[in-house]
Length: 215
Image 1 (tube, one colour):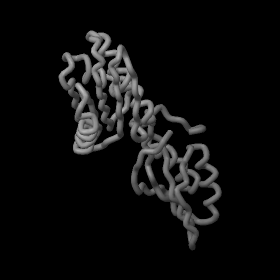
Image 2 (image 1 turned 135 degrees about the vertical axis):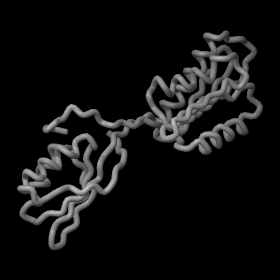
Image 3 (image 1 turned 90 degrees about the vertical axis):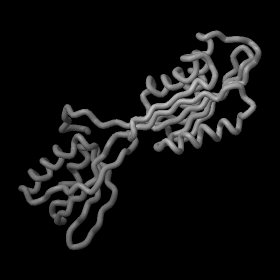
Image 4 (image 1 turned 30 degrees about the vertical axis):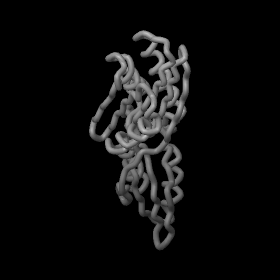
């Protein structure tokens, strides 16, 4: 918002933009990281099984996933020493701050033992590289709304919209003008109050939905 700022915190949502891949070789062991945005557990499990099938000859297929709506968190060391594989992959998701994501890291053993610290660093690097390759994106919550006004108020309202960084989804022209708009959710009430002031109480914004958009 360019002015009329409030102290309300925006509702942010950080996730992956798509799928990502990253490969790293450490002491002859090859680590292949795969990351994908998912929103339901069945999709996470399907992705894990897909990677396991693709690399059925690998010694380990470690994974972790986090889902926002169901508050679900799962991880597996898949045979690696406890705490050296699945948890580091999960920590990449948690510490980077994204959700609705699954990461699988496949390891082809090269014959040299890495030790617990080496495993943690390797799995962390592969998971982080895959997530970054998938593109980590932050969205903010918007309230969608409509305004119906006369042509005399139209330009005044449209002018005011620029100070609230409002997204213009569409305008319908008929006997009146209908503006289809979206605003960052914490600022909706402030804008609606301004709208009533501009129109002497005649015009009120009607909420039609909500969504997340890129910042």
